[in-house]
Amino acid sequence: MRKVSLVLGAVFVGAISIWALGAATPGAGIISSGGGGASLPPQTGNSGKFLTTDGTDASWGTVTTGLNAPNTSFELIDEFIGAPVASARTGAIGFMPNTSGTSASVAAGTATDSALGVWDLATGTDTSGRSNIQPVAIGSVCLGAGEVIFEARIKIDALSDGTNTYTAWAGLIDAGNGEGTDAICFRYIHSANSGKWLAYTRSNSTETTIDTGTAFAANTWYRLRAVVNADASNVAFSVNGGTAVNITTNIPKATARATGPGLTILKSAGATSRTMTVDYYYLKFTPTGGR
Image (cartoon, rainbow, N blue to C red; front, side, top):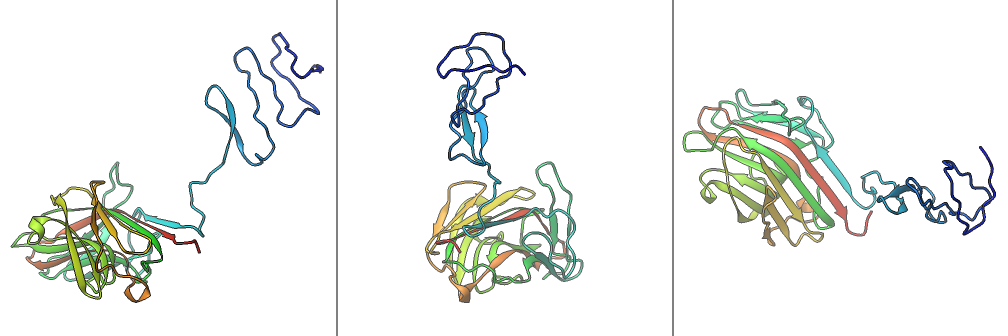
């Protein structure tokens, strides 16, 4: 490499492709009048950053991991990749299968191009058959200490009707075999709310419901999302990213009314099995003031 003495502010003309700067002002650089030149931004105070450009000007970028600091929030998502294991916790959230009745099951389903993995929750053939997934520690979410968000993507293979009747739940629950005592949840049964998805809150067995406005259809994917604000005074429910509907009463709060992630399908009539397919379950908690 040929050494050249440079004078600050001087203009050099020539086809020199490589310049070496020594003992220069920190962050000093070379501006080229031709293609491929660049002006380095100041280095002071930019340790650990990377050099980037918008095509005209160079600047320093900050390296990010895409993860939140654990003291400010946490996020969990279960993609249901791989088969569930009986009486064992599986995945990031620790879902465990629970079933009741002849041929009731929780099993790995068939993945698609939009679903990396799925679990099928089948009621079996008993008139009261049930299939449910929930963590062992179902009371792990205490509302009122920060914002809580959950979202689940599910579909069910057939409508509920008078012959083969079932109820489906998805959300934050405290029991896997029915309504339970406390919940922030979505519910579907053909005989309620004109067969549309219903959103509800339940605290100490007292319930407030609201119509989501979204009709239920068989074999159709639904993204069911709820956002509980930091002091648990409002829950915003939405389906497939649509306009949210809000509930402000009977929201379960604090440790006495704790809930946890859960999905359930429960038969109440008929001998034909019905299956809820779950693509993912997402949970985020942002504690007020950190932790």
